[in-house]
Length: 290
Image (cartoon, rainbow, N blue to C red; front, side, top):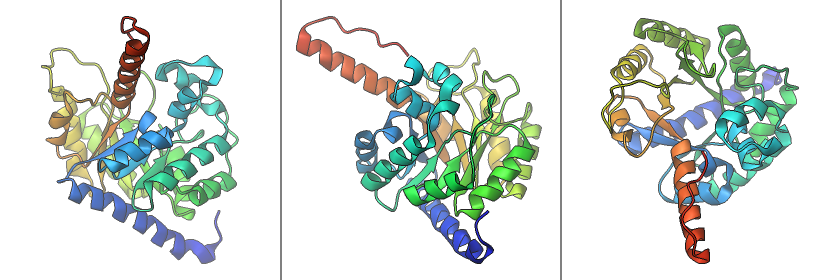
């Protein structure tokens, strides 16, 4: 752990990071965007979204593994299976580049091997937290699925001046991307416990599949779960999963502070590149694989 004589300094560092978050929320009318995927692992596109006004970025190891073609993965589902193999020094380099183009006032939270629910052991130590902080990270994007691991993660992150955004998931989700909570009442209880543990921002995974939802809307169950989250805690709240250009207005109307968007940006970029390339060579536009 970081030396005790730096505890107050690291607390101030974390407070400064959270001020960036609240400033973004307030400046964007109560709900802001955390931009991830290709817009946070490629410095060129990170600059593009920052130039458009985005104030929060999230490079993460599955997206970086996909961007680097690790083991030939071509989609996020398969990238999740190899994310733990990404070298942490590669993530440090991505963070350094993103920070260099984004500037000091943009909040940067980072997903790293060891920070999600892991199926394999990850060689992760105090030095890695130190290196990420020095690279320019403000916080750690975390998908732990048990309170014991989350508590240890928060303690290590805070000792290095890093914030933690952690998530609540549904027990039936495809991947265990957070502390499980089945009902809105359970969502509220889990959220309060996470806040008591010191989690700086609390998110809800919203990418579950539900039928009977009109275009541009979000399922009633997700609305109920988001309401339970936002009413239970005082820290910033996030929604992640399934958010796109058709339904983002509905998410903004839930009271959540931050919407997390990545796959939607990836899809837009793939289509734009494919369409432009096809014009140059005079071929039909291919349908990019997801």
